[in-house]
Amino acid sequence: MSLKVGIVGLPNVGKSTLFNAVSTSAKAQASNYRFCTIDPNVGLVDVPDERLAKLEELVQPKKTVATQIEIVDIAGLVKGASKGEGLGNKFLGNIREVDAIIHVIRCFEDENVMRDEGAINPVGDKEIIDTELQLKDLESVEKKLQRISKAARVGGDARLKAELTVVEKCKDWLEQGKNIRELGLTKEEIPAIADLFLLTIKPTLYVANVDEGSMHTGNKYSEALSVAAQAEDAQMIVLNNSIEAQIAEMEDADDKAMFFDEYGMQEAGLDRLIRAAYKLLNLNTYFTAGVQEVRAWTIQDGWKAPQAAGVIHTDFERGFIKAEVIAYEDFVHLGSEQAAKEAGKLRIEGKEYVVKDGDIMHFRFNV
Image 1 (tube, rainbow, N blue to C red):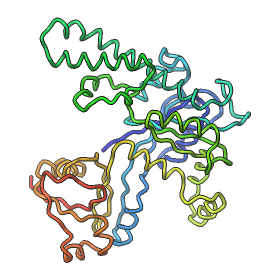
Image 2: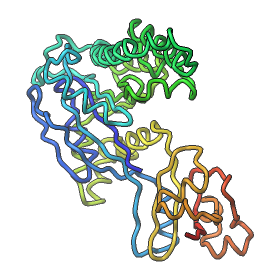
Image 3: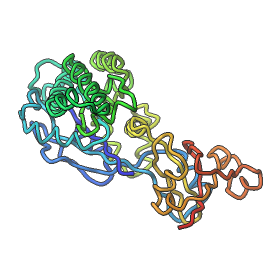
Image 4: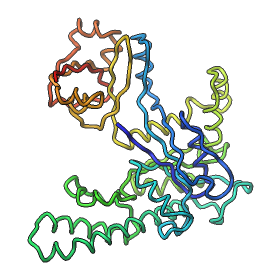
């Protein structure tokens, strides 16, 4: 599955520094001036998973492959972006292409880092970005209303009338200064606006970029942002992006362990961030495990066995017969696939089986 998460925020809040820290395939330029990032930087990020490491230890494969998500570093938005300010249309178009958003917000004071928006105000900064995305969505919604309203009211097309009701509901919501993801649209209603690729419907994770002294406890700025995030039922993570960038540069495990000890860290904050972004997209992982390769595969929560098989190859889904399934806990407890078979822990599942997070699977198919 190709999945993209976009990093957004105002200029000079630490977006590119965070991107540099998380990306395994590219390095973004991080500089202290507006619009340092114009074209989006893109990098692939391994999703940290202790289960994959445990399977590698037990199976001893020739190769181990983690599942990945694509991270896009999108240039800083400014007030007026919805009207084209600061190359806003280009940047908003980049956001439209991602599946979820990591919104980085400055929660630290530093007179050496430029800021055009006045005193540090994380909630106000969040609202600036929210407003620009809402205005752009409102523009899209109004255009669709103009396109379908007359036909829906004059004609007898029940589907078009239902679509009009949803679009009008979205317009009213956006005019109240609210994000579409908070509207609670049903699965039946969402197709009515799918063609609009709305920005504020995308799931969002907030990153409070704090000073070094606040990386464990947070501060008054991150606390204020946390309240705002909770109000829309969103997650927030506290990070010091500069510290995370330093950790990401370390290749020696002993050096990294000493650094963690010095800063009182159990793991890199980025690991928490990447896992949270993965879950934000409502994703699960299943594994294939053999001597040639142990691999993690990404699927949507709720997918059935044939869909999961299709992630490996479309032929697997098209010719699906059965799936051999071992629960991760059983595999680890018993130590091998053979031991799981002998203990009766290998199950044969059919087309209606809903794959569980952590399942270890082998597919039978015939094309």
